[in-house]
Image 1 (tube, rainbow, N blue to C red):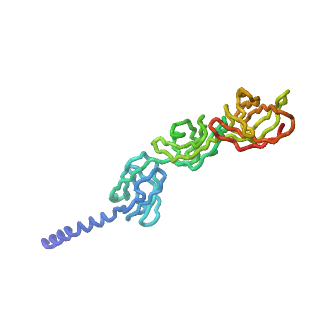
Image 2: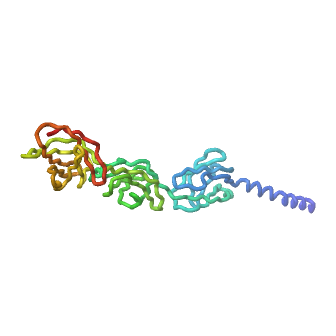
Length: 288
């Protein structure tokens, strides 16, 4: 009996590590996590061994749903958790967990795909100045940056923000979206056109020694100058020796008070020059 007891003790001594190894071999093992950091909504692929229907995937203390891809791969979508580092590991319902690895949840970066319209006239007003910013990852509390300065915007969804263009000079301007965690989208351009454009000229009221030409178009400004066949016609009071006068009525309309030396029809070219120096294309007119 003593001999049998000794044999059993020797067997138990050598068998216990083997049994322990067999038990440890049931624990899952993580070999790779791609990517190792990502914002919420990103799909992550975990490769390893020991994944099965009884496996549970954890980020910190959160049990995360996953999708089996193969016997050695599973994938999951990064949940909406605060930014930071989390322990990622896999646990079986009955058995030891895998080794934990650090996974970083990063801030969601907004992205602008388009703005509509992407250009407006400097004279536009009201609804004409409303811009729709389209993109993705516009979080609750996202702010709009116009040329780097924060302006009021209306977030209608995670993919759209609407704003009204502030009163700024013409030219190229930048629009960005800034999420609450201070992640900023790349800039997209908005063009504010300030170049004058003559679209039509028609004869208006006729007086004793002068008549009026109604000039219709875009981007006319206070202080705009009319050039008629190389001769300047100023707004306000005419300069000494000149009688022709330009009257500003709106961004879209000017009145040219013309004093003809006779009533015969003539052909001449008109150009509008704004105070900034921007000029309209020449417009040919037939009038006395």
